[in-house]
Image (tube, rainbow, N blue to C red; front, side, top):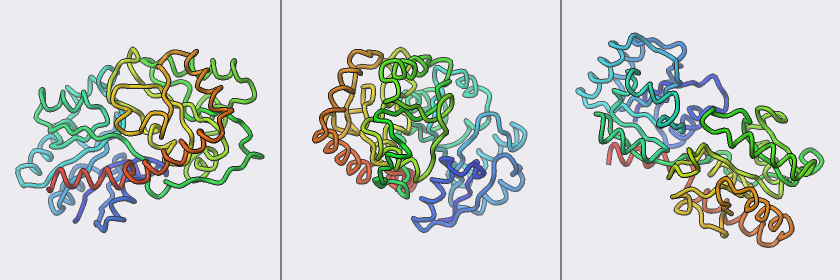
Length: 314
Protein backbone atom coordinates (compact mmCIF):
# COMPACT_ATOMS: atom_id res chain seq x y z
CA UNK A 1 0.00 0.00 0.00
CA UNK A 2 1.20 3.51 -0.82
CA UNK A 3 0.72 6.04 2.00
CA UNK A 4 1.13 9.81 1.76
CA UNK A 5 2.11 10.82 5.30
CA UNK A 6 2.00 14.44 6.57
CA UNK A 7 3.67 15.01 9.93
CA UNK A 8 6.68 16.22 11.87
CA UNK A 9 9.57 13.92 11.03
CA UNK A 10 12.27 16.36 12.15
CA UNK A 11 11.76 15.50 15.84
CA UNK A 12 13.49 12.14 16.29
CA UNK A 13 11.12 10.79 18.91
CA UNK A 14 7.84 12.11 17.50
CA UNK A 15 4.85 9.81 17.27
CA UNK A 16 5.06 10.33 13.49
CA UNK A 17 8.45 8.65 13.35
CA UNK A 18 7.20 5.72 15.40
CA UNK A 19 4.17 5.34 13.10
CA UNK A 20 6.52 5.57 10.12
CA UNK A 21 8.63 2.69 11.43
CA UNK A 22 5.46 0.66 11.91
CA UNK A 23 4.19 1.37 8.39
CA UNK A 24 7.52 0.32 6.92
CA UNK A 25 7.73 -2.81 9.08
CA UNK A 26 4.31 -3.82 7.73
CA UNK A 27 5.64 -3.55 4.17
CA UNK A 28 3.98 -0.31 3.07
CA UNK A 29 5.49 2.38 0.85
CA UNK A 30 5.48 5.77 2.58
CA UNK A 31 6.00 9.23 1.09
CA UNK A 32 6.99 11.59 3.92
CA UNK A 33 5.65 15.16 3.74
CA UNK A 34 7.10 17.41 6.45
CA UNK A 35 4.17 19.52 7.64
CA UNK A 36 6.26 22.64 8.35
CA UNK A 37 7.64 22.66 4.78
CA UNK A 38 5.37 20.79 2.34
CA UNK A 39 2.72 22.88 0.61
CA UNK A 40 -0.74 21.98 -0.55
CA UNK A 41 0.10 21.52 -4.26
CA UNK A 42 2.85 18.98 -3.52
CA UNK A 43 0.72 17.14 -0.96
CA UNK A 44 -2.31 16.97 -3.22
CA UNK A 45 -0.23 15.68 -6.14
CA UNK A 46 1.20 12.87 -4.00
CA UNK A 47 -2.01 12.03 -2.16
CA UNK A 48 -4.18 11.57 -5.24
CA UNK A 49 -1.84 8.80 -6.41
CA UNK A 50 -1.74 7.10 -3.00
CA UNK A 51 -3.98 4.58 -1.27
CA UNK A 52 -4.32 6.70 1.87
CA UNK A 53 -3.43 10.15 3.20
CA UNK A 54 -2.29 9.84 6.83
CA UNK A 55 -1.96 13.19 8.62
CA UNK A 56 -0.68 13.83 12.14
CA UNK A 57 -1.37 17.53 12.50
CA UNK A 58 0.73 19.83 14.70
CA UNK A 59 -1.31 22.60 16.32
CA UNK A 60 -0.66 25.93 14.58
CA UNK A 61 1.15 24.56 11.53
CA UNK A 62 -0.28 25.24 8.08
CA UNK A 63 0.18 23.59 4.68
CA UNK A 64 -1.94 26.07 2.73
CA UNK A 65 -5.02 28.27 2.84
CA UNK A 66 -8.06 26.93 4.64
CA UNK A 67 -10.18 26.69 1.50
CA UNK A 68 -7.44 24.76 -0.33
CA UNK A 69 -7.07 22.23 2.49
CA UNK A 70 -10.82 21.74 2.74
CA UNK A 71 -11.09 21.25 -1.01
CA UNK A 72 -8.22 18.73 -1.06
CA UNK A 73 -9.67 16.62 1.76
CA UNK A 74 -13.13 16.60 0.19
CA UNK A 75 -11.71 15.81 -3.25
CA UNK A 76 -9.73 12.84 -1.91
CA UNK A 77 -12.82 11.54 -0.15
CA UNK A 78 -14.86 11.80 -3.37
CA UNK A 79 -12.06 9.93 -5.16
CA UNK A 80 -12.24 7.07 -2.66
CA UNK A 81 -8.88 7.83 -1.04
CA UNK A 82 -9.24 7.74 2.77
CA UNK A 83 -7.84 10.66 4.75
CA UNK A 84 -6.86 9.50 8.23
CA UNK A 85 -5.48 11.00 11.43
CA UNK A 86 -4.30 9.38 14.67
CA UNK A 87 -3.42 11.74 17.51
CA UNK A 88 -2.40 11.18 21.13
CA UNK A 89 -3.59 14.51 22.59
CA UNK A 90 -6.79 15.83 24.10
CA UNK A 91 -8.85 18.59 22.48
CA UNK A 92 -12.09 18.71 24.44
CA UNK A 93 -11.92 20.95 27.49
CA UNK A 94 -8.60 22.54 26.49
CA UNK A 95 -7.82 25.80 24.70
CA UNK A 96 -7.21 23.91 21.46
CA UNK A 97 -10.87 22.83 21.43
CA UNK A 98 -11.49 26.05 19.52
CA UNK A 99 -9.63 24.47 16.57
CA UNK A 100 -12.51 22.06 16.04
CA UNK A 101 -14.58 24.91 14.62
CA UNK A 102 -11.89 26.71 12.63
CA UNK A 103 -9.09 24.37 11.53
CA UNK A 104 -9.69 22.86 8.06
CA UNK A 105 -7.95 19.71 9.30
CA UNK A 106 -11.31 18.68 10.72
CA UNK A 107 -12.57 17.93 7.23
CA UNK A 108 -10.51 14.75 7.52
CA UNK A 109 -12.57 11.61 6.90
CA UNK A 110 -11.34 9.40 9.76
CA UNK A 111 -9.83 10.51 13.06
CA UNK A 112 -8.47 7.98 15.53
CA UNK A 113 -8.38 9.54 18.98
CA UNK A 114 -7.21 8.43 22.41
CA UNK A 115 -10.22 10.30 23.85
CA UNK A 116 -13.43 8.25 23.72
CA UNK A 117 -15.61 11.30 24.36
CA UNK A 118 -14.02 13.09 21.41
CA UNK A 119 -14.78 10.14 19.14
CA UNK A 120 -18.40 10.40 20.27
CA UNK A 121 -18.38 14.16 19.64
CA UNK A 122 -17.00 13.78 16.11
CA UNK A 123 -19.57 11.13 15.23
CA UNK A 124 -22.50 13.10 16.65
CA UNK A 125 -21.59 16.67 15.71
CA UNK A 126 -19.38 16.56 12.59
CA UNK A 127 -18.90 14.76 9.29
CA UNK A 128 -15.62 13.22 10.49
CA UNK A 129 -15.79 9.59 11.58
CA UNK A 130 -14.37 9.36 15.08
CA UNK A 131 -12.67 6.16 16.24
CA UNK A 132 -11.52 5.55 19.80
CA UNK A 133 -8.03 4.04 19.88
CA UNK A 134 -5.73 4.22 22.93
CA UNK A 135 -2.07 5.14 22.70
CA UNK A 136 0.63 2.47 22.82
CA UNK A 137 4.34 1.75 23.03
CA UNK A 138 6.72 1.66 20.03
CA UNK A 139 7.33 -2.00 19.21
CA UNK A 140 11.00 -1.25 18.47
CA UNK A 141 11.45 0.00 22.05
CA UNK A 142 9.22 -2.52 23.82
CA UNK A 143 11.83 -4.41 25.81
CA UNK A 144 13.16 -4.55 29.37
CA UNK A 145 16.24 -2.41 29.77
CA UNK A 146 19.42 -2.95 31.75
CA UNK A 147 19.51 -1.50 35.29
CA UNK A 148 22.22 1.09 35.84
CA UNK A 149 22.06 2.09 39.49
CA UNK A 150 25.23 4.15 39.27
CA UNK A 151 23.69 6.38 36.61
CA UNK A 152 20.08 6.14 37.84
CA UNK A 153 20.21 5.56 41.63
CA UNK A 154 16.73 6.80 42.56
CA UNK A 155 14.12 4.33 43.81
CA UNK A 156 11.13 6.45 42.74
CA UNK A 157 10.93 8.48 39.55
CA UNK A 158 8.57 10.56 37.45
CA UNK A 159 9.15 11.22 33.75
CA UNK A 160 7.55 14.13 31.92
CA UNK A 161 7.18 17.90 32.07
CA UNK A 162 6.27 19.57 35.34
CA UNK A 163 4.68 22.63 33.73
CA UNK A 164 1.90 20.86 31.90
CA UNK A 165 -1.41 22.20 30.58
CA UNK A 166 -2.86 25.02 32.72
CA UNK A 167 -6.01 22.89 32.93
CA UNK A 168 -4.02 20.25 34.89
CA UNK A 169 -2.22 21.89 37.81
CA UNK A 170 -2.12 18.56 39.64
CA UNK A 171 1.06 17.54 37.78
CA UNK A 172 3.17 20.17 39.53
CA UNK A 173 1.56 19.43 42.88
CA UNK A 174 2.33 15.73 42.46
CA UNK A 175 6.00 16.29 41.64
CA UNK A 176 6.45 18.76 44.52
CA UNK A 177 4.82 16.28 46.91
CA UNK A 178 7.08 13.46 45.75
CA UNK A 179 10.15 15.66 46.33
CA UNK A 180 8.98 16.66 49.82
CA UNK A 181 7.97 13.16 50.82
CA UNK A 182 10.85 11.09 49.47
CA UNK A 183 13.74 13.54 49.20
CA UNK A 184 16.77 12.14 47.41
CA UNK A 185 15.04 8.78 46.94
CA UNK A 186 12.97 10.51 44.22
CA UNK A 187 13.98 12.06 40.90
CA UNK A 188 12.00 13.91 38.26
CA UNK A 189 13.22 13.55 34.66
CA UNK A 190 11.86 15.98 32.08
CA UNK A 191 10.86 19.63 31.83
CA UNK A 192 11.48 21.34 35.18
CA UNK A 193 13.61 18.46 36.46
CA UNK A 194 16.61 16.45 35.34
CA UNK A 195 17.39 15.90 31.66
CA UNK A 196 14.74 14.39 29.42
CA UNK A 197 15.52 10.74 28.67
CA UNK A 198 14.41 9.30 25.32
CA UNK A 199 14.66 6.17 23.25
CA UNK A 200 16.30 3.00 24.51
CA UNK A 201 17.99 4.85 27.38
CA UNK A 202 14.52 5.37 28.84
CA UNK A 203 14.16 1.60 29.18
CA UNK A 204 17.34 1.49 31.28
CA UNK A 205 15.98 4.28 33.49
CA UNK A 206 12.74 2.37 34.08
CA UNK A 207 14.65 -0.85 34.76
CA UNK A 208 16.75 0.96 37.38
CA UNK A 209 13.85 2.45 39.36
CA UNK A 210 11.76 0.46 41.79
CA UNK A 211 8.69 2.60 41.13
CA UNK A 212 7.61 4.89 38.30
CA UNK A 213 4.76 7.21 39.31
CA UNK A 214 2.39 7.94 36.44
CA UNK A 215 0.08 10.84 35.66
CA UNK A 216 -2.24 11.98 32.90
CA UNK A 217 -4.36 15.03 32.20
CA UNK A 218 -7.75 14.27 33.74
CA UNK A 219 -10.23 17.07 34.27
CA UNK A 220 -11.62 17.01 37.82
CA UNK A 221 -10.06 13.54 38.20
CA UNK A 222 -13.19 12.14 36.54
CA UNK A 223 -12.64 12.33 32.75
CA UNK A 224 -13.02 8.72 31.53
CA UNK A 225 -11.14 6.56 29.00
CA UNK A 226 -8.27 8.96 28.31
CA UNK A 227 -4.69 8.26 29.35
CA UNK A 228 -1.41 9.64 28.08
CA UNK A 229 0.94 7.33 26.24
CA UNK A 230 3.00 6.83 29.43
CA UNK A 231 0.27 4.43 30.62
CA UNK A 232 1.55 1.97 28.00
CA UNK A 233 5.10 3.28 27.59
CA UNK A 234 6.19 2.70 31.20
CA UNK A 235 5.20 -0.98 31.52
CA UNK A 236 5.95 -1.55 27.83
CA UNK A 237 9.52 -0.42 28.44
CA UNK A 238 9.83 -2.57 31.55
CA UNK A 239 8.88 -0.17 34.34
CA UNK A 240 6.82 -0.92 37.44
CA UNK A 241 4.10 1.72 37.47
CA UNK A 242 1.71 3.21 40.01
CA UNK A 243 -0.92 5.15 38.07
CA UNK A 244 -4.07 7.11 39.01
CA UNK A 245 -7.21 5.08 38.41
CA UNK A 246 -9.40 6.40 35.59
CA UNK A 247 -12.57 4.78 34.31
CA UNK A 248 -11.57 2.36 31.56
CA UNK A 249 -7.92 1.83 32.50
CA UNK A 250 -8.55 -1.59 34.02
CA UNK A 251 -9.59 -2.80 30.55
CA UNK A 252 -6.01 -2.37 29.30
CA UNK A 253 -3.97 -3.53 32.31
CA UNK A 254 -5.13 -5.78 35.15
CA UNK A 255 -5.11 -4.03 38.56
CA UNK A 256 -2.55 -5.41 41.03
CA UNK A 257 -1.43 -7.93 38.41
CA UNK A 258 -0.01 -5.74 35.62
CA UNK A 259 -0.25 -2.25 37.11
CA UNK A 260 -1.02 -0.67 40.49
CA UNK A 261 -3.66 2.04 40.71
CA UNK A 262 -4.18 4.71 43.34
CA UNK A 263 -7.14 7.03 43.85
CA UNK A 264 -6.55 10.09 41.68
CA UNK A 265 -5.66 13.11 43.82
CA UNK A 266 -5.27 11.12 47.05
CA UNK A 267 -1.66 11.48 48.20
CA UNK A 268 -2.29 9.33 51.29
CA UNK A 269 -3.36 6.42 49.10
CA UNK A 270 -0.42 7.03 46.78
CA UNK A 271 2.05 7.05 49.69
CA UNK A 272 0.62 3.81 51.05
CA UNK A 273 1.05 2.15 47.64
CA UNK A 274 4.58 3.49 47.14
CA UNK A 275 5.75 2.48 50.61
CA UNK A 276 4.28 -1.00 50.24
CA UNK A 277 5.85 -1.77 46.88
CA UNK A 278 9.22 -0.30 47.80
CA UNK A 279 9.53 -3.21 50.22
CA UNK A 280 7.52 -5.91 48.41
CA UNK A 281 10.20 -6.92 45.92
CA UNK A 282 8.59 -10.21 44.86
CA UNK A 283 5.16 -8.84 43.93
CA UNK A 284 6.61 -5.65 42.46
CA UNK A 285 8.82 -7.57 40.05
CA UNK A 286 6.01 -9.97 39.12
CA UNK A 287 3.75 -7.02 38.28
CA UNK A 288 6.57 -5.37 36.32
CA UNK A 289 7.03 -8.48 34.17
CA UNK A 290 3.31 -9.16 33.64
CA UNK A 291 2.66 -5.53 32.67
CA UNK A 292 5.48 -5.68 30.16
CA UNK A 293 4.23 -8.94 28.66
CA UNK A 294 0.68 -7.56 28.30
CA UNK A 295 1.90 -4.42 26.53
CA UNK A 296 4.13 -6.40 24.20
CA UNK A 297 1.26 -8.76 23.34
CA UNK A 298 -1.52 -6.17 22.92
CA UNK A 299 -0.45 -2.53 23.18
CA UNK A 300 2.31 -1.70 20.68
CA UNK A 301 1.84 0.77 17.84
CA UNK A 302 1.95 -2.18 15.48
CA UNK A 303 -1.28 -3.38 17.12
CA UNK A 304 -2.75 0.12 16.87
CA UNK A 305 -1.83 0.67 13.20
CA UNK A 306 -3.11 -2.78 12.26
CA UNK A 307 -6.42 -1.77 13.88
CA UNK A 308 -6.46 1.42 11.79
CA UNK A 309 -6.03 -0.56 8.57
CA UNK A 310 -8.68 -3.09 9.57
CA UNK A 311 -11.14 -0.30 10.37
CA UNK A 312 -10.53 1.60 7.12
CA UNK A 313 -10.04 -1.23 4.65
CA UNK A 314 -11.67 -4.23 6.34
